[in-house]
Image (cartoon, rainbow, N blue to C red; front, side, top):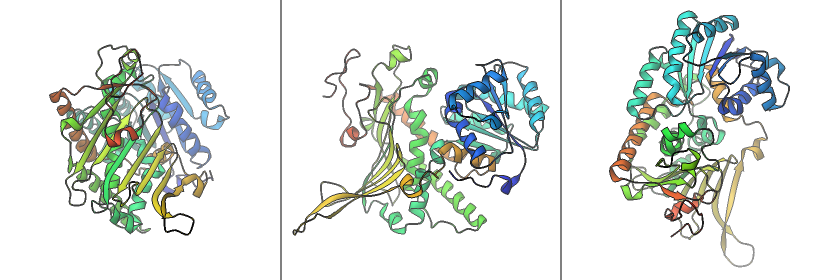
Length: 474
């Protein structure tokens, strides 16, 4: 990755990032590597890091922990890491934290909540007390999804946030929006008029959106028992992807900064408005699943939490009336893959298909028919494809690199606003209400077996017991 000019070109002042949950997997596996890349490859050096956690008692032990995980020399960055041990309920934490902020510089303090949502209130109380003792010239807060557990819960969270921060200082993090292929949905539609016109009911038979994961809940047992697949992935990742694909989008802005800002604000407003047009399917079309051994894994033999959800959504707009958006997310699936597929009307059994793959590889494929070799006039399907690695090499930043870069710069473009989040929760609240009212229970499914393709025609009806994974389909 080629070095780039640092953030001093935007606003050169010392930034202190304060991470809550700095010994967890998210920080150590995603956020810290992104910070390292920004520090060394993008030359963003005016940084100091304060890490809060309970796992270590000494700063040196924490620094060695980070260095051991990443197995490379990061001495210059590690020297800027300050570790503060202790529990959020410890009344001494705000005082110690304010002293560290004063030590690293009071120009800008950015609080990053890499915590389960159930700890947000405690973290915000700590932040409020800290800021009463230390007054940086600029402050921000970033927090990871899910943002609450319902519309009402989100409103309470937003109220707590706005006691301390202004709207423009709050950054709701959905790392999917930092992925290059997801951002490319905007470019693909805005800069290719024929694609923008093709994405409508006149040409599209259905849309498929999937986030399929091989891993289970792992160490997030308590979190997942509180959340489930609907609130963990459907409420944010899947609805973000749906809106980016389905919104009406104008041609991309020119280089003028004000015009670009207006364009991006219009995109955000269009996404929020589209959520108000989403219609849920009848109860019989809602499919829930739970992978085998989940109850044993979370040590709850009566758990009815879904680890898989599949359902079609519909949009009551002229552009998309009648087109099903088939939404799927599940854990312990056969493959790790995330994608959008636009299935076009076709004269042949093999549909024309636009596939936008997010993982495992960021790529775009268009399935079309071409003439086969020979004298006859025959056709067969083939793929036209684009990959970021093939076209641009290794220059594409990772999702968290982009997210943190924009956070440092104060650019909220890729962060969902409160209106979008509120409308997304309204959809989820209606969905959860239907599930409870109709008594929809999750089907049991075997691990490492199902793929998204199993659901596009009709969801498989699982018949296995908890002791065997054979003969699992009716």
